Image 1 (cartoon, rainbow, N blue to C red):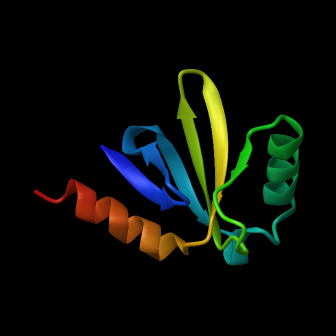
Image 2: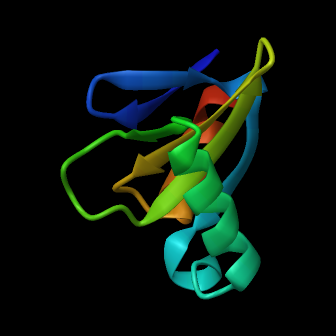
Image 3: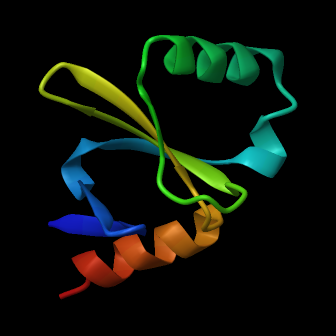
Length: 86
């Protein structure tokens, strides 16, 4: 299944490693270092021109991607649960 993340983009739900709220985790030094390294390596994808509220980390086919999305992590979690409900 694919999870729509905005901006005509979707990610495979099996590839999602984690969904992180930028307000809660961006003040941590390690998170800032991780995001800086990912940006330097070309792994960051800005889904929208709007201010991002969270980021989705994916790993698939040996590639890591960090998607900056305008939705908060609770909204993304809700979308994921709606997709997996029978």
